[in-house]
Length: 302
Length: 179
Image (cartoon, rainbow over the protein chains, first blue to last red):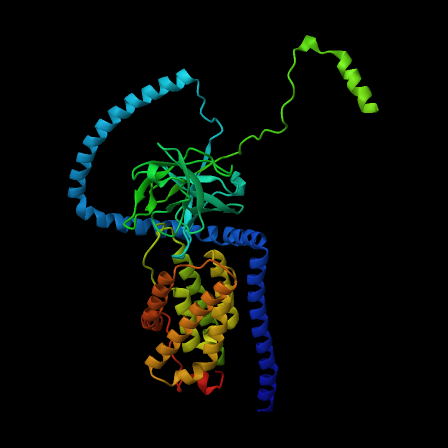
């Protein structure tokens, strides 16, 4: 009995110490994150880099089989779908003709204008490993990282449109913040009118178009492309089309297929060259007059 | 007999950590890339509260703190914040677990609901205090309500598959005075 009480006395303060210590550690982690966010975010990238790929072997088959079941459910509607697809195919054929003609015309015009498309716009393709895992965050994790030369801020697209930007790079993984995330802000241009605006994610399927100078010139259906303002993001990437919600606010109907993010292209962007210096005086070579230079030197000496 | 009990204790502790990892894994699966208007329960929260209320000895404080911190890191939440509130509330519940044990299930459910509400509210309060941007109130409330509603279901599932149940006076652990 005496021994038991002894043991009890030994354990209780230790438990209390552990309690206080745990609270202190958690609080410190949080405060450290609040004060020095970049360093802790790098640590987070490291943790995810270690943790998520180790589950990859299980993730791929589970995701695959769930998608299989979902697709199996869609077999029930296969006849209707078939009809609809045929009808769409007809329309598409007409469009294809138009597109071919336009492509040729475009090529001719580009040739006439001597335009060179940006040769540095190459991409790395990654597979989506995981999503954010919480309903409050919109992001996905790719299986490419610093090892593949990925750098924070690069754009990620699916085949058609912009999906998001890289935010957080680990050694073998990197996180893409989707345009729908509530902390996503992308500068954009609205096509026929050339109005510039900011695409602001608000955790809904259709991000808001904000900071629009002249909303009268923008109509639902207009194309939205990234503008590259600020230099962090390549310009001219298709984002989506303008749509207005029942409240009259302009929103983006995204071109990328957010239902099925599987493979994403990360565009390499090496930034724009900046112009340094103000430019020198240009004079003919044989006209360099020695006298004024001497006079100038003498004047400097004085 | 004592050997057996120790093994079982560590097995159940392992089960807690393993199940938490499974929940994290399940939430990470890339199936929901579209923003949702509706959301299911926060399983981690339900699990922590349930284990602490039913069998406090099977959910050691360090495991709760560790698992929640990992979840904070992986789910892009402010690291340590939700872990801190969960830990504090769970320790509070642990202290009350002995009195709740002898009550009917409805009391346990209410206690759990109170605990989960406290965690979510505390989390939100701290977020506001530290000027963090927080998620929409509607979604948070839906998640909380779903968590509370799913509590009995999770209790049943864990009872059937893991054998987690409230301690009985006839249980050898209680007879040996371990709990």
